[in-house]
Image (cartoon, rainbow, N blue to C red; front, side, top):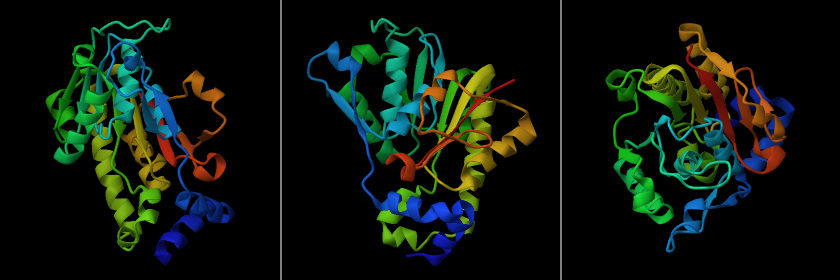
Length: 269
């Protein structure tokens, strides 16, 4: 085990750290989310297994059928499926092909192939004509398509401490410098999302990290430079596993058995 890792997070979470640490190595609670598209077409996977917190992150974008939506770092595809359902099914659970678009972007070729498999297994091709899979670096969207999108989900690459604790060889590589370096990349992606979203549009920035450097600190930097508005969608008040942070929400596994997850809901003003 990496002693610097424990020392770093003990300073942040103090007496709570031992419980969080234990929870990170325990089996993550997941849900088997019913696939609404499978009710319309036979031969599709009936469910998708995912972390409950991931579902909340996608729902916090509050997409509409007319929206042009960017899922900047889409793989493996669970959040993309949630967004596709939110755009395709009305409050009466009736399907209609959205007039908007969902850009499911994933730069990694291997991860993009996994994303395509998930889409193929869960949504009939005719029902996903509005979904377009792309392979750009997320940083390109702000430059190439400024103020094009109504909604942007920036679920960015992060330290992923649960994954680290499952992989001793990767844990050895952890350092505070590494999480700081990641935060630079994360801010770059968030800045790209900011440039790509329309005025009045919404960004959800998220990670599966427990490091404040990768979470609130990244959003704080945007707040200082761009002056966005932080939103608190009303439906989130019903979820007792969410813990409010200065600029967003956190899900920690010692309280609920799933996560970790951090997200912030941001409006471009």
